[in-house]
Length: 112
Length: 107
Image (tube, rainbow over all chains, first blue to last red; front, side):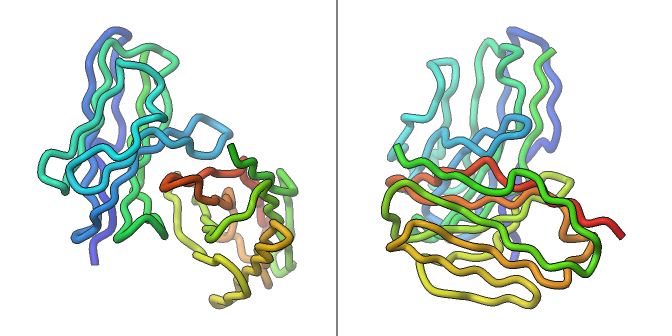
């Protein structure tokens, strides 16, 4: 079956702009996760949804970051007033429960 | 929070060689995942292995939860095995990743 999909695959933006990153989880998976991966490091947790609600958003670095999952399927990660330090690969994962987690191909965000 | 350490950080092999990658974690866990991140950045699930041993072709993994480590074995390595190997353990519902082992397999 289809895996986790993410769009766009690459996003280049200018400092101060707003961006939205989309994640389409595996059909039927109720748990959805966002992680961020900087060069040379392992992914770091941002936020976890169980159904439509954010069950754990403690990994969001500040209030410029926000994520939604209004119908319990597709999720959008939103970043306001982007900064150069936000440049990274943003990974989405889904799971039928909590584990194991299955990852999408990621969105590479570059803030100029 | 839980600490995850992977070794070695870098490994270079000739095609056909065998290798063992290690993952140590600082607290008891009830599951563990191994991933391969290919050169295009895709994280591919290798094993979900809370304890015991699992095998999948040339790859196998063993987790000894009571001693807080897991091992990933790669036999008869191929150039397509190149990439970064991560282990990850749960803290609540999130995964905590190690820093990875960068594997390069030369022809």
